[in-house]
Every structure is written in C-alpha cells, then in structure tokens.
Length: 328
Ligand code: NAP
Ligand code: GDP
Image (cartoon, rainbow, N blue to C red):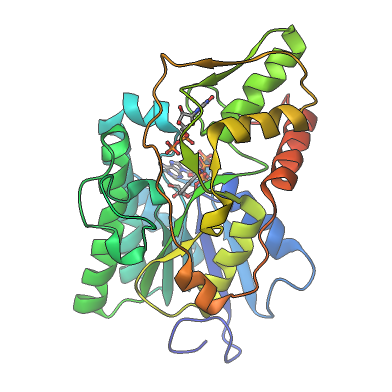
C-alpha cells in the first residue's frame, strides 16, 4: 500500500469495505469489480447490507470494523430518497444520516483506515447560486428547503473530512454525484428518485391501460449518471484520486435534460404508447443544480459516459425482468 492510501504499491493486502453495498451504487460497484480484470491482486471487497449491522448504532458499526479490519472504505450507506420522501421526513433524513456518518468516520479513524471515500450529492449545493456549481461552492449558502435535512447532514461530511485531516491526519475524501439511476434502484413511487419512480409508473400505466402521469411541470433540469459509470469512476477515485477536497462525478453540462424529456425516454424504452400527463399539483423541487465537471475532466478528459437513452433502456429492461423481486 502507498502512503497516499491508493491500493497500488506494495503487496500488503487491501480490504475495501463498501457500506450500503446492497443498494443502487453498491451493487453497481460489486458488478464492476467482479468483471474480469477490475480487481487488483491482493484486493478483497466486502459489500455490506443493513442486515449485517445498523450503522446508526455505534456498537454495531464497531463490530463490523473489528470483523473486517478494512484498509479502505467506500461509504455509501445513507437514508436516501427522492424529492417527495425528503420533503416529508426532514428530521429523519438529518438524524439518521448524521448518526451513520459519525459512526463510520469515527471508526475509520479508530481502525486506522488508509482511505475513506464518502458520498455527497449535487442536491446539497446552495439553492441560490451561479452556474455551473463546483466543488468549492458547497457551503456558499443554504440548500433548497425541500431537502435541507439530508443536505446539512451530507455537507457535514466535507466539514469533518477537513477536521479529521487537520487533527488526526486522516485520509478522508468525498464524491459529489448528480442524480443516479440504474439496476438495483429503489423503484418506490412514493419514496424513490425520479427515474425509478417514472419507470415504475410507466410500467403500471402500460399494464393497466392508464395515462402515464409525470409529477410537477416537467420543466426542471437534471444531470443523470448511470450507476455503472459511477461505479467505475468511484473505484478510480479510491485508487487514484489523492485530494481531500470533493470531486464531482457528473456528465458534462450539455447533457443536462428536462424531466419531461426523461419521462418521454422512459415511455419509449417501455414501448408505452398511451397518453402522457402532468400533475402540476405536485412539487417541482429545485429548478436546476447544474454541476460543472472540470475537475473530473482534468483527470479523465476522454471518459465516455453511457448515454441517457442507453442507460434508461438498460434500467427499464432490468426492472421488467426483476419486477417481482426488486425494491419498490
Ligand atoms: P440506496 O440504493 O438507497 O442504498 C442505500 C444503502 O444504504 C443500502 O445498502 C442500505 O442497506 C444502506 N443503509 C441505509 N440505512 C442503513 C443503516 N442504518 N445501516 C446500514 N446500512 C444502511 O442508495 P444509493 O442510491 O445507492 O446511494 C448511495 C449513496 O449515494 C448515498 O450516500 C446517497 O446519499 C448518495 N447519492 C445518491 C443519489 C441517487 O440519485 N440515488 C444521488 C446523489 C447521491 P439495506 O438496503 O441493506 O437496508
Ligand atoms: P431531486 O433531483 O433531488 O429533486 O429528486 P428526484 O430524483 O426525486 O427528482 C425530482 C424531480 O422530478 C422534480 O422536478 C419532480 O417534480 C420530478 N418528478 C416527476 N415525476 C416524478 C416521480 O414520479 N417521482 C419523483 N421522485 N419525481 C418526479
């Protein structure tokens, strides 16, 4: 292991613990590292689910670190939800994420983890801002009120990364992804994010011969990253990105799309030909949160992201094939 915490170097074993390993991003990382050639010699990967221990609980978290003795941690575990889940449970989004993050970070310090990579989100950026937003602007004003519980809990990861470095010389960093979608997503209509929610609603509309209803006006803009791309880039961050400051993992600004266009792409992938309607009594949330990816492009100028059409088709096919067992 090298002193910067990357996994290339000497022959010492590397144990990568992925918290939240059973979720959308965790399963994508698992599939990625299980593909031939994507695991390095001497690397062992552990993918945790909440069944193995509740990370809100300090003793359960310590037991997991004691058992696996990780050298590296990719911290994904969180209370996660779409706009409507966030609006309805700000207290729980704040408290659960604060507890999980405090336990994981403190155990990384105690167990001398060489590198911790935690997940933030572009939805925690300031609401009133100039665009594109970059990593230096994270704390420059309040987040959108719809998800302020989640946003403040997540922002504190960045604050504590700096504090742990200053006081204990810890090598903690973070990733800021845009909206994520793909296989193993949470397809709950009430609680999930927009793409899995739309996929589920479109599936039911087709089955039941009913209109496909998009919530809100359809005009808000979002950047979406396919979970397989994010998995590949996250493994690269763990091995090769050596800055303590966050890095935004986002498609280019030109790839930003409206919710309406995303919904029409879902309808096309589902081969849904019935009526499409907008329920404007539902919230739009933040109009946009356009993120710049200059830092990522300075390291990975040629990285090719999966197109939204291709990613949505793969997600729709996976949802239809796994309808009986997937999270919904
Ligand atoms: P997800 O699919 O909802 O998975 C969440 C994971 O966290 C699951 O493995 C879950 O375990 C685990 N978890 C939740 N509460 C836990 C607890 N108390 N103890 C232990 N484990 C717990 O989430 P995701 O979409 O993969 O998100 C991964 C990370 O990316 C999160 O930090 C999220 O904030 C961030 N992010 C997500 C998005 C997005 O669009 N999805 C966008 C930006 C950032 P079980 O399933 O086993 O219960
Ligand atoms: P956000 O990106 O953090 O705001 O969270 P979401 O992934 O939940 O996206 C919310 C945006 O999609 C808002 O503009 C919603 O009005 C719109 N939207 C349209 N239909 C749906 C749906 O079925 N579920 C969700 N979660 N959002 C929807």
